[in-house]
Each structure stands twice: as C-alpha cells, then as structure tokens.
Length: 264
Image: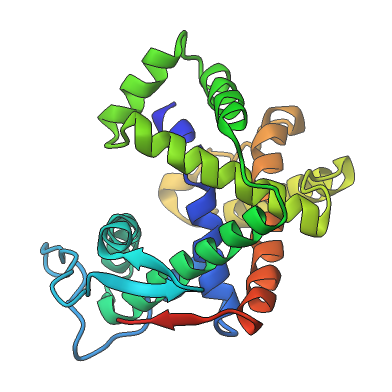
C-alpha cells in the first residue's frame, strides 16, 4: 500500500521527468537515463558495488527560469530520487550509470516543472489550500488510512514531512489543472482501457509461449486478471501517459518565450 500512495504524491515529478526525457530529444523510454556511459561518470552497481549520488559539483543555483531560481537543495532531493531508480536499472543491465547525463535530465525536469507551475499561476489555475486538503483526503480514502494523522505518519516514514507533502500535492494539482486546461480531460475512455487490457493480455500470452520450453515453466500458466480487476490500474497508467504527452508539448512551447539558464 505504501508504494501506491507514495507514488501518487510524485505525479508532478514524474510528469516533469518524462517531459525532460521526451521533450529534449528524440529518445523515448525511462531507461535512457542509464544507457549513456561516460568517462566522467561513476560506475553503476558492478561486482556487488553500488554507486552513490555525487553532488559535489552542483552549484547553489542549478537553474533559473524566468528569474526564478532552482536551488541546489531542491535539485538534490529530486536527483537522489532519480538516482535510486537509475542505479537499480543500471545494476540490472550491467551498464554504467552516467551521472552527468542524469544530472542534466534532472535539471531539465525541474525547469519543465517550474515553467508549468508558472504558467498555471499565470492562468489562475494554481492550487489553493482547499484543493490540497481535498486531494489529501482523496489519498487518505484511496489507501485505507483512517485519519490524516495516520497518512502523514506513514508519509514521514517514507521521508516526506507534512509541509513537503502539501507542497508536492499543491504542485500536482496545479499541473493537473493546467494540463486539463491545455488538452482537455485526461481520463481514458472505456475503449482505450479495453484496448490497453487486450494488449497486456496478448503480451502475457506471448511471454508464456516463449517460456514453454523452460523445464521450470512446465505446468504453469500465466493468468491475466479479469478486466474489472485491472481497470483502475490501467486507468491510472493511461492517464499518466496522457499527462506526460501533454506536458511534453506544453513545455516545448513554454520554452520558446522563456528565459531559462541551466548552470550545471
């Protein structure tokens, strides 16, 4: 349960990261952050050793966005979160982790977030206290917490204090409002959900067929959960994809008239 609600508070960051990865180049997919070895990079996990985030060369101001500073502290928190994911993928792939590239992508993601938040404010769409309270209440109910104190206690165990949690939610709601204003409803249709489910089921079927000759797989069948059981999960995934796509396009447009400097 913890993973679910903790991830839900990271929607804003996820949108920004996908914006940086997809909007800054023609490359796609989240794995690209780990796939560019560099002589100046630290090695990913190799021979049982795991790299650590290197923040020694990060300036006090990482970027400026229309005169608004992106601080080292804000960057460090975002980078450490991205680094954990990148390091795990580098370990599994056996490739090196390019920290220079990851830093640039993290800075781009924060720039994208700041541009969108500024645009949301400009359009009068910035979330207020009531929006934050409503979203937190929704998170509490969705994840089975009995009170807000219980929710915040659980978040604190994950390293997210109440003040930071509220700030994350405020950014999330502001971005959701902005993207809805820009591109319309992000909620997937029943047809889209069914198409996604059929695609998933087909992938599972092909994966099972490919493992048939493995001795340990004999007698085992890959069972796909019923559509109704997967519907909520698929809806969230498709919504996130739509948000990321809309954010990519919007950030590209916002950058055209923006004064952005990345100081890494």
